[in-house]
Amino acid sequence: MSDELASIPIRSLRKWFRQKRRPLPWRQNRSLYRVLVAEVMLQQTQVVTVIPYYLRWMERFPDPASLLLVSDEALVKFWEGLGYYGRVRRLRLAALALLSRPEWDEASLKCLPGIGPYTAAACACFALRQEGAIPLDGNMARLLVRFWGIWKDIKSSSVRKSLQQLLARHLSKHQICPDDMEALIELGALVCQPKSPRCIECPLNKRCVAYQQGLVQKLPISQKKKPFELFQRAAIVLYERGFFWICPAERVKGLWEFPSFPYVDELKLEEELRLKGIQTFAMQCPPITYQVTRFRTRLIGFLLVERENLEILAHWQRVTWKEIQEKPFSSGHKKLLHMALNFFGGLDLILK
Image (tube, rainbow, N blue to C red; front, side, top):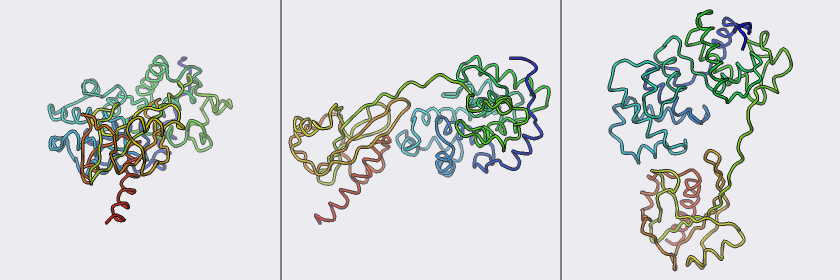
């Protein structure tokens, strides 16, 4: 990548950022803990989804010490809906580690549990105001690849490293500050979007290679994503004399779900259920489709009010109506739980 690449018009960028920046809650009172929580929540999760979770989190856990007073299961329940549940366990460990020393920098932050190069750089840049910390996220990378017209795979480590080196040069030549890093991320998120970039609004468009050469829709280039793997499962929601039966989730530690089994042909599900000792069903739920990384699951729930000959396995747990609502569930089974509560709640009223 040549030294002759265009310089970023910093003044135009700053003016745009002052006018257009979003009033995100983590941009207020930027303590290291608050920025850390926001950055971990934002991993693999959209801003609009994170905002209510962040606000609730800060109300319940305003500082690292408050995380000492909650159980793992309660913490996972609080995180329920954000997914990638390993994040919340590592976040607790990282946040508690902040209590161990008074001063931090990008290098020491990388040693915290679950904190990768980007999160460490973001915390150092936004909370510690560390000069030279470059939080290169996907939004900023996409913007810079278009701005400089880079025809290489945006996901490759060599391209990411080159972008960071170019930005480091700008830091020294043009006195780029931490706020400028955030402005580039914001510009990538709001204007230089993946599929429908709003180039006319962009303060960098006069020097942008992709815009000036009509290549915006062709950049960045990246390798195709691997296809999704589809799993089909049938779940049994047994509500027996005021109690539900649940079991630990198969894929995610710390979560709960309804007992389930894989199936191949939906037309043969009734036959499979009979083989498991179930002759009649209270109700078959509409299919629920949910996704974790590249694994997609199609879940069909069967709501039962009688055990019949269904075998209760040793790892199943019987819980009350109140207890089941306090348990953290995986996303698909959480939707199934809502269906079950609505159905059995109405059924209880009828039977009374």
